[in-house]
Image (cartoon, rainbow over all chains, first blue to last red):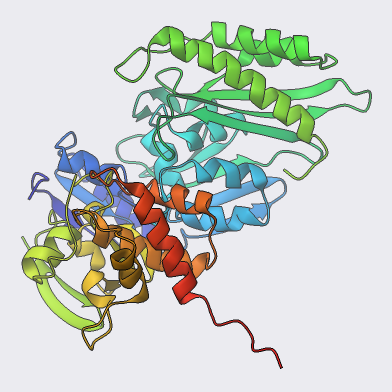
Length: 288
Length: 163
């Protein structure tokens, strides 16, 4: 057997699950297992206890209310993909790029968000849509905004005794446009670099609100703040979008690795920022 | 410490005790002797170990056997009809030379079962996108694509009769 030995608990209530996580030792949450089980197989993770949350009730809901989309900890990526097929082209496009259908059938949205792989799509989407992670710990529940959630590769603000029970995305407002693009070696691979943008335009045609986020471009997903600021309140021209995209990419400090150099990543980030911002502008007023 | 599980595989129920760290792939192969499910990379990349869990394709190397408790699973052994013949998808792989060395084939066939149920008339592009989740180290995807196209035709309902 490839993984090192561990104890296994399959609690039936949220309190039991949180209690198990807080029981000391190195406990890990098992939901879809599509990131954790490979790490166990490679022995990159050697937890003493796995807390399998798949039997917890009430965590498999997708709820849309007052402009928010709440996704419970047991919602598979495939379920959100099916939900999005008729409701959100943005979510549908993003999810199509998350690994492959057999992975999405098991992998959860919340698990992907809290695993915090810097090259993963959903964490960048959460950041772009100013989402929050709902965490339950021994001292109760708290909301962690996406911009304070990601700290380093595979490292988040979630405590070792906390369980992420849901994530909440702020849905793009009516009339908003979106863009999503990534460069990867093969379809379904982790991206070398990717970008996602959501923009809204005011009545006078100027850009009202610009949100741009990158993945694969740093140790965590990052907002393209310099690009957002360069465009807010401006009349969107191709030249301005190009400048804003380059400003956003210039502020990045990507790592170089065997897959791509830092220079290449920054160069691609600028191109993808320009493409996603342009696409978002073109989609303003269309379905989102 | 082992945990008792009850799992239905290809319509037959099994009761076993498993160590938590045993993957479902190893359980199927070593405990149930269902060696048609192949293990390649054992960390979710290659797709050789794909099975159907409740009718949906999943990687059996990325699931623990203990998690299969009370679940229903189909492996490649459950795809062909009981009379020993071939399923139309297997038939198409054979006819179109889609097997090559055959190591990746069981995983692909399991994915294709679910894929053609959802998209009975896929485009070549959709087939290629689906195949991105399966590695064939013989590197000959062309015949596999043709086999899936042929399987889609074979499984298509007959055209309505014209009077």
